[in-house]
Length: 419
Ligand SMILES: [Zn+2]
Image (cartoon, rainbow, N blue to C red; front, side, top):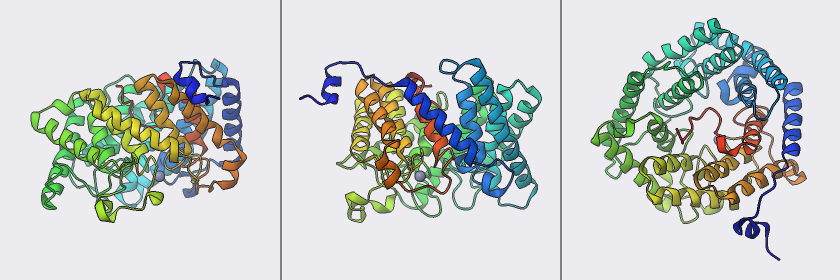
């Protein structure tokens, strides 16, 4: 008997039970609403949108934008819920700003105040509160002056979670979501040039000859999306026309991507960091297959590279990432998007958009179904922040929503690689 995948290869239609997916989303929303407190205390707000409640506000804002899936009453309800979560998160962020806390908490995108102010601007824009939208847009924009300094953080200023790539990513997100040039292209270009210079200087200082751009975070040369060179370069490619600003920039970016491509393992994965190459590679069973470390994060760079240069080798790399995730991506670390099942399943939605091959929708749906099995509940570790955007159910909700509208699927707080 043919397997379902073979049927799909024959062009048969895939059936995603939309009502069941929506019912599951509603059940998850009930869990989040009843279990996740919304106070301005550190245990609710620390970690920005990544694990703090500003990430839950983002999830509700994202739902409120899906007028094809939800009624106007439902969208109103989501906007109100977003407001209930973002208000205490703002109070917490403003207290951090006034405190003597480290700069990193004040400028970080996914892990700190920049991300919270971005979500605040989105939520106030959605409810038509122009004064508050402007206030938080200005707070976000004002951080550009800090991020322009080449080494403004002591442990690495360039990566996505706390550094300059994150700030640029948020700026692009805001510009698109609010249909305004909040952060001018010139400012974005200057930030991107600072990032290129930082990567060149680091590579030169460490006598790295095989790759023109390299970065470190806490003294580790990470490769993946969360702290690594792949996440940084991907954001630079998202800035309109930046990759071709000068022949030298294009050469350095593309050479770096091609170097990363050369690191893809026979199984399709990417090492976590430069100190895990060759003889020092992890045994295959210990390799990480996460958005934060490994193929599920690097794939977004390869997809963007394919869309910019149209070279098949980048698309082939994406296909290999997706095949690896299909084999090894059902993680035991929870349902989240950073190192969980939903983050890996997002890759199938990306591949579906890239190739239009329905096989990837089938795979995304299978991962969705797995999250609701007894096997998953029994074998999966409960993350520290079980309802959050990056570790918990809020990210799962975003993924399941995108499963119902795969043409528009977009990893939360990322810019769209198709832009
Ligand atoms: Zn992670």
